[in-house]
Length: 180
Image (cartoon, rainbow, N blue to C red; front, side, top):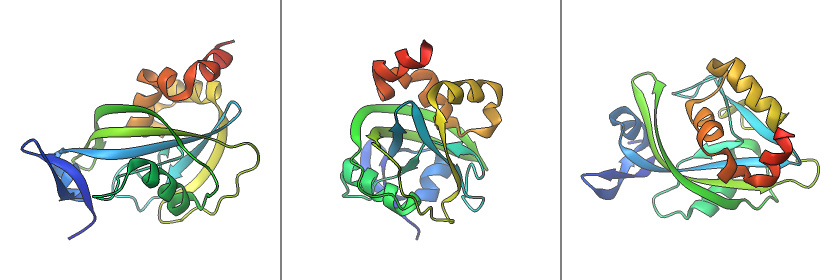
């Protein structure tokens, strides 16, 4: 049995194997984090060994909480596990739901708590190569433009976040600044 995540089966939240949840398209809990520094967003490119969406660019980190884990603690844990980042305190921004085909006959059907963490200076990173093959900082406006030009380079959820939820995730200051 693999990693167990909180998923809804017959209307009841229950522990389900993570791979099974994706293969069956079960609605399940998730956490996504964006680290920002001014107008720049820290992005990660998913490792080639990931069972879905390998090699695609995504937000700073994302995961599924453990069965009894609070989503804010999960956000801090995954920053550390995926990127080796500590000392940031993600702020809850939005709970959203999305449904997306992620390839290999798998579906993300997620109820996601999205967090935003503000970096005030350099961010020391030690990416886990099993999770992350590359990182980069990119200006919010440049990211929006690149996603429009080359959507095939990005995960489905990142495109959904930027297209449908950017104002709620990033707030008016970042969005207004990016548009001017």
